[in-house]
Image 1 (cartoon, rainbow, N blue to C red):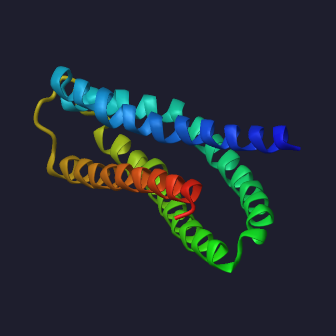
Image 2 (cartoon, rainbow, N blue to C red):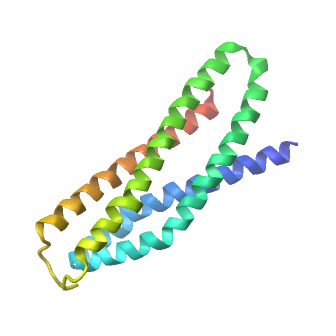
Length: 170
C-alpha cells in the first residue's frame, strides 16, 4: 500500500510542478524575453498562442491535483488520527489555508484564460503586428492581465509554502 501512496504523492507533485512551474517560466523567462525583443502586438499574439497550448495542460493538472489532493487528505487523516488532536488541528488549519489558496488560484487562472485573454486577443485583432503604441483600451486590458498574472505567481508560491508546511506538520 505504501507504493500506492508514494505514486499518489508523486503524481500530485508532478502536476503541481507542471502547472506552477509552467506559469513561473512564462512569467520569469518568456514574457521578459518577448518584452525586450518583440513589438507589443506580436508579443500578445505569441503569448496568446502559448497560452492556448498550455491551457489543456493546466486544466489537466488541476484535475489531477484535485483528485490526488483528496486522496492525500484521506491518507493523511488516516495516519494522523493516532498522533493526537493537536496534530490533526494543525494539519486541518494548514490544509484549509492551502485549499483556499488553491481555489483562489483556480479563479485567477480562469479569469486569465477565459476572460482577460480572449478580451485582449479580440482587442488586438486588426492591429498592425509591428505597431509600437497600443490603443488605450488594449493597454488597460494588458495591465489587468498583468495584475492577474502577478497574483497568480504570488498565490502559486504561497501554495508551495503551505504544501511544505503540511509536510512539516506546521
